[in-house]
Length: 210
Image (tube, helix red, strand yellow):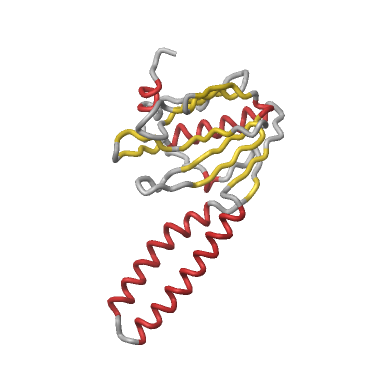
């Protein structure tokens, strides 16, 4: 290939067909590259590389993984029958303060991967969301915080601390939007090749106006 990996990562959002995806997991090191070929899934990541026949892919897990610098961030974990796993994120690091979303290319690649797996007669487990234990822990944490905030809010109102009550309302709104969205999107589930979970994929980009 004539184009270097860093250059590919920088232009991953331009003209991708869905059979190839490139992103940078960090500012240090080479970009991660994935390509869907007739032989299988070709990949290069963290100094390793390989080609996995589609029939040898044991599982695909899609999840929503927001970061402090990018709330619109999704993740795909692809596992080989040997237990080896590779990961693709929907964002790419460009500078110390810039993590760029690659919604169109990531979604196109994930959709095409499932098309290839289905065509190959794959029996891979298709999993959506996070693990049940982590999900249950998150739900419990959310419930405990809600109980604590409710008690503090009631006390603030009873004692006339309206500024404190207003602060709690703002905190609840922010926490609920972030943590609640994470829990809602990442509910453990199974899905099929024909119906991928929309909440675990970037939104379908709109066609530009002509």
